[in-house]
Image 1 (tube, rainbow, N blue to C red):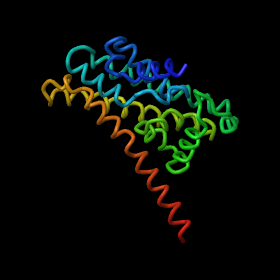
Image 2: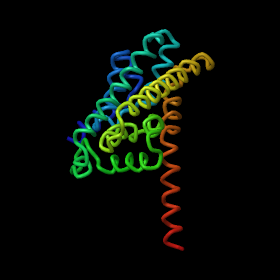
Image 3: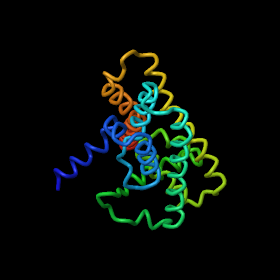
Length: 213
């Protein structure tokens, strides 16, 4: 069982392999699942999009199709997450942990929402895990639907376009970048988790200061 889980995790996080195998359809599917369904929290959204942009620059993917289609999938994913939260409500916070659901991730998104309000739907796009659970938190909090849709569209387009175009222009600026694509992916992953690490350190420092005061 552990070998199967390890193999599955390796497969879904191999962004270069995913794109080579499934092309644009795979990119769209991963983005939708990561943003709309709880079990997609571990999917590599940022690195997948940057890598897709690199592939587009090399002519393997069509950028003019990628930009609108993937944006639509990101927006649709958040819509699904919102309605899950709206219908399930506070029951989500009482749900037991499972292999595909972690209450701590939901709580992290809730804390993010409490701090930033409606802007969470835009900002969370750039924070792994939080972007998966933030729409459900907004739905559970009964965020006004029209307001949510506005933030959702803005956040979805900003996230998808910024990631895809970063990869596209990196490929144009750095010759033979495809030979170093694993390094690029590693850098993107590090940058994507950096805000979470900083916030974790700040939280621990605040707790330490509170204990010492």
